Amino acid sequence: MENKTPQNFDGLGLSEKLLLAVKNAGYEKPSPIQVRAIPPILAGRDIFGCAQTGTGKTAAFALPIMQMLDGRGHYPAPKRFRALILTPTRELAEQIDANIAMYGKNLSLSHCKVYGGVSQNPQIKLLAHGVDILTATPGRLLDLFSQNKLDFGGVEFLVLDEADRMLDMGFINDIRKICRELPKKRQSMLFSATLSAEVQSLAKNIVDNPEKISVSPDKPTVDKIAQKVAFVEYGNKFDLLEKMMKERLEKSADSLALIFCRTKHGANKLAKRLCRIGIEADAIHGNKSQSARKNALERFRRRESHILVATDIAARGIDVKDMSLVVNYDLPEDPETYVHRIGRTARAEADGEAVSFCSADDAPLLKAIEKFIRKQIDPLADNPFHSEAAQKAGTLKTSLAEKLAQPLPKSKPQNGGKHPQGKRRQKPQQNQYYGESLPRKKGKSAQAVVEKIGGKKSAQKIGGMLKRKMKAAGFKPQTEKPRGKPAKSSFWQKLRESLRK
Image (cartoon, rainbow, N blue to C red):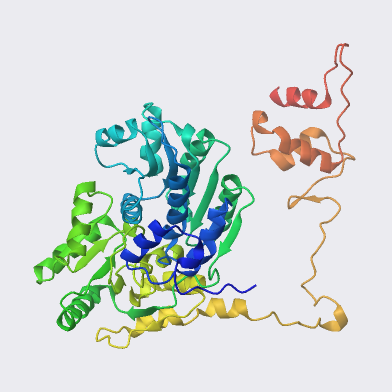
């Protein structure tokens, strides 16, 4: 049955208080993931959802959970929380907690966020009285649990947001530890931007008989993102970026751009170079303190800096309104990361643009991305630093790949199906072994055989090789006597003793 997207939120079963909050937030119509997820969550079903980045997954699980928590009227016990939302990064935890605060203005629900990089004392104080909704990263959550600062016994709802990213960051063991401590009777939801075998395996252990929701699983990238690739030599990357940024700022002084680098050092270096040419830019990555990262994001949102240079740690959790450009200054090594990077633009049904810089060395990464998104990315038209070598490496197949793609020809045997002369595999002669012509048993002693095939080896290093060669020469070892009776000297023992003499 085809699911038609309603024009507003009235038909999803939300309360008047939440509908008013959604209207004040500027939401006009629900996204497909919200249409398909909110009703079954309100009905008590577990959810396994896969939707593109930037399609409103946060509201899809937060709105129905908040409505059910408010309707039950329970209060959390000290150190406990009623809903647990796990996220991979601090930025995403901040974003979800901010959205919950916006949705819950007309509700009497408490909420807080827990993540590393900041002092734990304020977090412990908030948890001491109990909260309704806790948004946390797995590491800090387990740290506080080990200190007996929180209790998992009151969890009624569990949400794993961006589950694929948590697996990429190595949180799988932490997630399993947390789930073992949770009550068996709970409602669980797992949301992911991409669908992989690892995510499906994790879902089997988290959700029970879930409602499976897949919104455009065959199209990992948002259709409204105009994707372009700029073929450029490595040394000309910054010149091309400078040209692009200055042209955009001349057209619109409030335009924002998010630039991704592969390394933390590269992000710092690029931000400093942009500041030297008069373009305000900040860097954000894992080595920055949480306060520095938060200040950089706030400056970016207030348009005090127009460019934010980030590593992949910020590929999730950055949700800035009207950010219309994402630049992949360095292509990611994982194709899925490309999807999460460009998903920072075209948020909430808006349009966006993504430009990726590709040098000749980056050609394999570009091919992997195009294979993953099932789409060939068009070249950037206005590129004065265009590199033919990079484009040829990124678009043409190698001669080896072309040969492997061709079917093997069926060759007919020559000479009536017989092997050509000189090509038949020759069988070894009867008395030939390891390339040595061995003497027959008749008329030859064991000492002569040793001198023939093992004269260069010392008596102590003959070992198993001598056994194999002697056996091939026709000598048979004597069988050993059964246990319990004194064993006589074997043939090989007598042979070794004679050699030592």
